[in-house]
Length: 84
Image (spheres, rainbow, N blue to C red):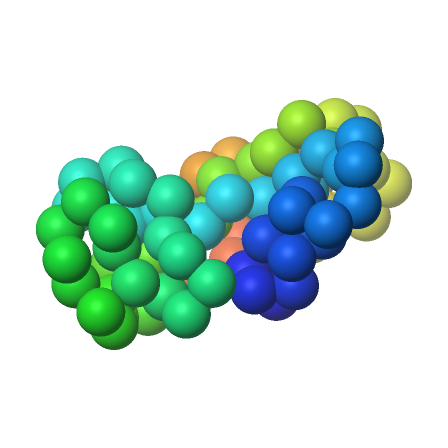
């Protein structure tokens, strides 16, 4: 998903990112292969990846899963849809 999103932003003019995937330790957006350019980490573990909403994401989705994913969150963490 991360690689496809980066590809779209680079090759399709006017594409807004749906989500950003960043290294939770330093806040840097990850590269297409999960590398952190700031830290030099070539394979950031999934538990250290934070998914953040982008400008292309629907700000008022109808389903509870999409609403729960509007907030930044680390990957592999359980999703609680009861609070949204």
